[in-house]
Image (cartoon, rainbow, N blue to C red; front, side, top):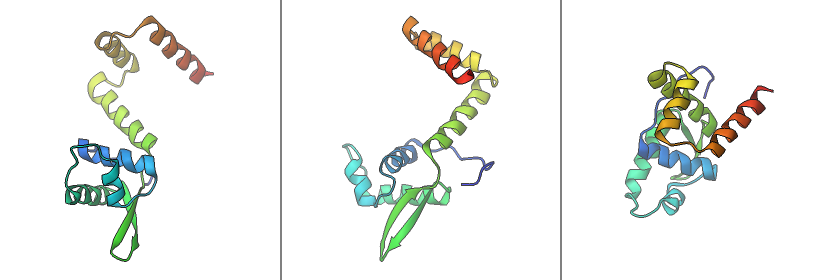
Length: 126
């Protein structure tokens, strides 16, 4: 996917399929079905989701006769960066400190986790 092109947000089902593809690298629908926990959706449902992902530009395929092996076009980190950036601007006015403040109240961050966060920030700044 080209840089600068805005990624569409994925539905829960689309994200589940993308997680499986990111983990495998390449897969046929039946291989994805093997990885989906019970209760499994119908094969046709997963096939439809993968075709939607292809239309959205997240997935492409190689053809082997009537079979298609799918692979991600968008890396997990690229999607995550866009998703978090959108969340940051939509809910926290673009402020990381507002987001961290919210999470610290909501998730009850321990002192150890707070220290780990500070260490990560220090490491990334140097």
